[in-house]
Length: 375
Image (tube, rainbow, N blue to C red; front, side, top):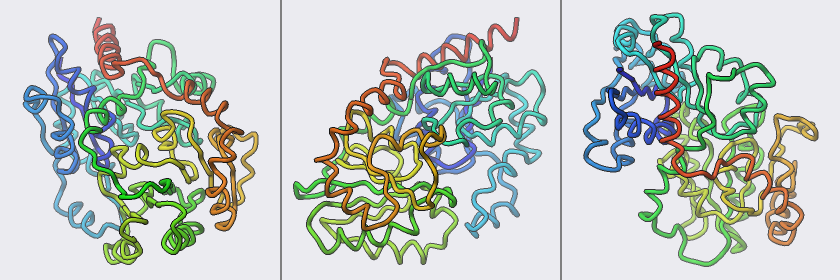
């Protein structure tokens, strides 16, 4: 049985399928090939490999037509992932496989272009919360790998998934990054608390424009806390490098780190280093909350969030609307944490499947589904 592990979007998605790829390759009768849209994804996979066997798994890049490559270099249109996946040479390549395992939700566009015999399997990257996490994208996939039972319940209630066509495996990314943890040096040479400002890229919900400069300015002129500014990697992906440099010049050694898209933004370097989380709707809050810790949520668009199931995390910390309120909430975060620690502990149990071997569980379920499907 031939299985392609497809990373059709940004390199950070490799964290979510690397260990699943390694596990699938260990199963008898399974031949795995890794396909990626960008060279950086294959580079990241090399760093996540456990041993020489993992590194020996065949891997290659999808073909990017010259006109698409030219548009990619402009940045403003993004990486044009759906057009790359749907190009004729790539459809011909993907059609050779019995199954395609991917964390790229846009991979659903392949459904009508591939043989019916090719199974599409989606590995849900991130931990759900926003409405976008529970969209109809699931209907295009034959099988889904989920991180937790909370997502399972909502997707079943919304008729997005069906019994026998999914598995709750846990969060394989946690296992992948655990191997990198011992290689990390301290980010700051002082004992001040570390605040992670982690805005999402979604324009209608993100807190970047309203909160970034005030937080940077406060951390730069005071010694109250260290600040890591690490927005979602998609926020600056389409912006010219001259704009990156304008923001990066605001960094202050020993006080403020500004990272607009390096691997440290996605390999949990920052979520593990931080003592306080300040953000809006990113699922990275669940990577920060390996145990109860102070959170501050930034409501930059006056969203009526109470009772809204698309904002399930905002009851885990103070919610503020103004930069001055955010600074005050950060200053009081440790003193007020007792108001939220119990609820955080319960939510961590809901959002994180603490059982070991998530990737192995996912691989076993995928192979089992494919065997049953072939009968």
